[in-house]
Amino acid sequence: MLPQPHRLRRAGEIRQLREHGRAWRHPLAILLVLARHNDPPKDAQVTTRFAVSASRQVGNAVARNRAKRLLREAIRHHLHEIETGWNCLLIARPLTSKASFAEVETAVLQLLSRARLISPKATGAGKEELT
Image (tube, rainbow, N blue to C red; front, side, top):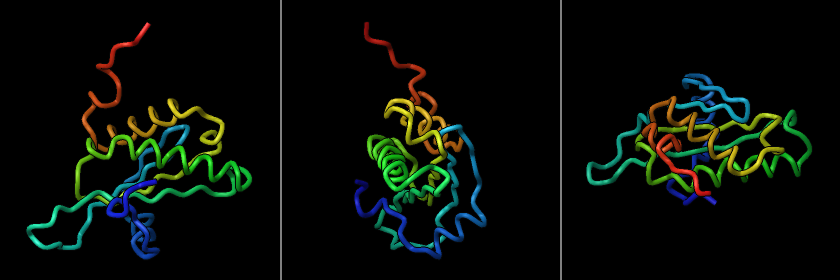
């Protein structure tokens, strides 16, 4: 589960993100990103917040919940690498629920890299394989 400060929960903010956000697509997920406009106190750090959704096209309730859990877990593992000050929405696609965690994590990292919210080296390009 994502920590509370990293959750985007208000319907109005999610609607605004869907209408005005920039989108990147991958066969496993879609990432929508919009800069946060609210002015926090100067001493508070503005975190990047995430919402995850899955439509009925993904499958039944079990498939939708699995897809959302995989996406949230992939984000949670890399929160410390993600640039601050953004609202993000990850939308699961039909293949997401059938994919492994490693495939979903790679997809999320690629999307974040293409959106320039994470450095390209964090996507695994510099990782060595264990044999």
